[in-house]
Image (cartoon, rainbow, N blue to C red):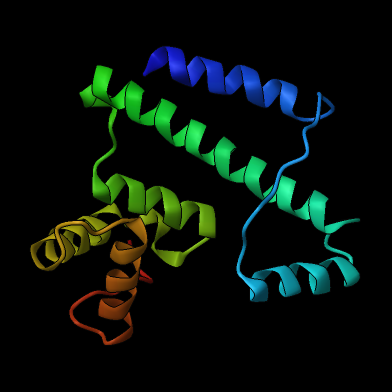
Length: 142
């Protein structure tokens, strides 16, 4: 996996401005029409550019996610808990919950009991629901 990931990274480094190839791409007709309209609206200069940028962004995201997962396999103690991930997301979003790890931890524990594959967004949504309905949580006072 590490060699393949390294190869992907090297290919991405060469992707912009490197050699090009002509390829045939099957895509849903509605997507093609949407791409044309988005280009007309200024998203990119051509449908080809829009398609290439989207593919590049997706491969870059895959590489980042794969590298992070590889790191966590090698160092399991470094993987943040669901509550820590939700807290980081709250901080990034500027949520009033950002300084309330204890509330987010409680919500994370409850969410996982109902949805074992929950993510940070699920936890923040659950937390905000608890706060909005006043179920024993006062966000204003840390």
